[in-house]
Amino acid sequence: EVQLVESGGGLVQPGGSLRLSCAASGFTLSDHYMDWVRQAPGMGLEWVGRTRNKANGYTTEYAASVKGRFFISTDDSRNSLYLQMNRLRTEDTAVYFCARAHCSGATCPWEEDYFDNWGQGALVTVSS
Amino acid sequence: DIQMTQSPSSLSASVGDRVTITCRTSQGISNNLAWFQQKPGKAPNLLIYGASTLQSGVPSKFSGSGSGTYFTLTISGLQPEDLATYYCQQHNTYPLTFGGGTKVEI
Image (cartoon, rainbow over all chains, first blue to last red; front, side, top):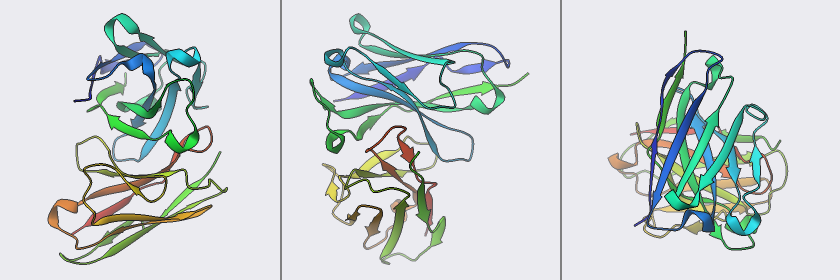
């Protein structure tokens, strides 16, 4: 059974840093594209960024709102995904979900690039 | 960025009703559209991908259609457990974008 479990959320002051983790089980994380999606309180879903899989060199993409401040990485030995968040702003307050893209392997055509599994989310609160 | 416009933003329906939610995109995305259901306090759950393909394990009461810039999600035989917010999402171009959501009340 595929499972994704986020951890590391909490309260941080504006300008601070925080690292979220997403532990994967039931599949090999390095085979899949993996994403972070966030949801501000009472609001809709916002894509944060992704890492492509090992076959594609773990290259990354980011939303404009976080580019240069947030960084996604993986640890194959721990089968885990990370989101390093720096220079945090109050508007970064949200529940952060990790999500698995369906496609795996060397190619990921757009038709197969949908989120088929999500974690339960981790709350990040940025406040003084 | 591709803008996603969902309508209505909320709806109230009765048990047994058939409801339809629409999603329009600012650019053509072929059929690279997914629909998610999010119940209060929970993570989103994939219902439909490829605009019309039902995810394994999802009841056939859910159906999707559309291509290009216009898409619909239909829920047949509405039940109390369908109370949730529904989101469309395009997986055709970066940045990946979501619709604003449709809250379904029973």
